[in-house]
Length: 633
Image (cartoon, rainbow, N blue to C red; front, side, top):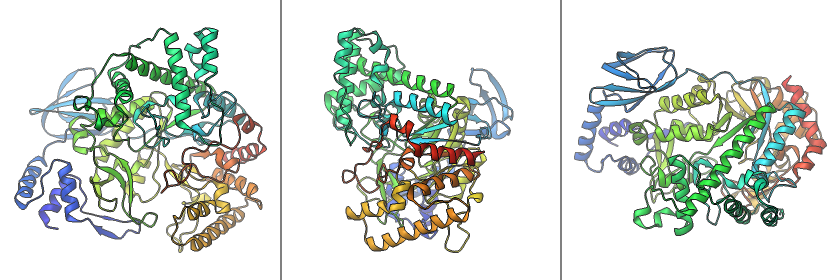
């Protein structure tokens, strides 16, 4: 690869090489680099085009970016005199951005340009040492829920665990919005919009409109409740809830609530999807860009979303009263054919798919099918879309988990038509991405958790720790990387700036790990090249874990006793927050999601094998909670 292309790529944040999971250097194919530059509107196809693009990049190198980050405790030098515009519109002449500014969004008029300035505190407050739960909300089910866990179940769960157990946090799976036409996307990590909430989570009978309805309407709504099944049927549940919501909306006089422009736009998208199908790229050309309509279906979807936001707020407030923090989960991206792809086409690289390079887990790489932010467009627009996304998530939350938090530094871009191994990393301005996150979390009084599992660069872990954002420590992966053979790490040496869990939604449950279910399931589906070798490794991993537990005084012989011992080990670590999954407590062997499968495995469709009422009385819950509380002190 010639030096001019390497310099040009670096100027635009496009990697020409990287280190793989084993820290071995990998060189990116030149044509991939050229294609990705083209996706950023940089022509590098010919030597003359490269020289012209490089000349422009060099000329721009001394200019301030369109958006800069400043810490409240530090000043920042400027290339010349400027006018600083504060959030209230006040103006002052400056030759540097001074320290001591209040956190917020500022403007900087310098020369003929206006630059966005994000002023953020250096760090968030330290999280308290505590424990809580991690829930796949859809998996809860009670006598009052309609075939899927809902916000009423969550309110009852938090009241119970806060009062009876002293739990202080509940981390949820993403509750993002889906496109309201069948088939409903079951994965919470492939949402239509990350700015709005899922009406699947509504407790219909808790709505004010239900309480105000006449007896005949309530009876009609009640008759729609689907019976529980051993698989969550998203389409069936949505059909029932949509019908119930339509009945209540009509009973309310078909209101069109007074909503903000972005909600009106989202509601319009939902109405257009009902009319033209769930893929906006196939709509009539004049509708392939954001518009707002004021028809009855737009009014209905705006009203539905208003109900979602009200219940989210009520659940958060009730949880706070019980001493529990609700922590939402932000998926790494959105469905390119969904509402956010439609509304934010100017700041997303549509056609590109986010993924991961080849590694030992996935030798062909990973393609997640999600479009990434365009870093140049974020910069030019003052990171407004990213800011609005965070605000939407933090509106009714006391914390936020960032899925694949390394994406604030870089994302693996797969160009259109290429396989996942034919991509490269595109870098983002991590200083600004983190400043926006820190500022918005500060303004909301929220804690931040970064999912930093897998292959992450050291600066990711360091950047989170510097800002008092918690990383992720999972029992299966927390190892002593400096010791021969990389054994499981002594619990006393776990990082304190982290959230400790046994597993994640993509990994085996506690019982599944102990019984080798993760090997059996993949072998049965033909996903393993050497099932015998995997079985031997699983047995060795179990033996290593049991030895660690016994070596630190956490007794257990049966699987149920070992599960309690695992939680006792987590609670003994210095980790700020320990999270417990009901899947682990009640001995579920199946994991919520089996990576590498779509319909071959019931991903995101598995309810808990016990009802919420049964969970309250289960002695296994008492045993685990007692062990965790004892370890937390």
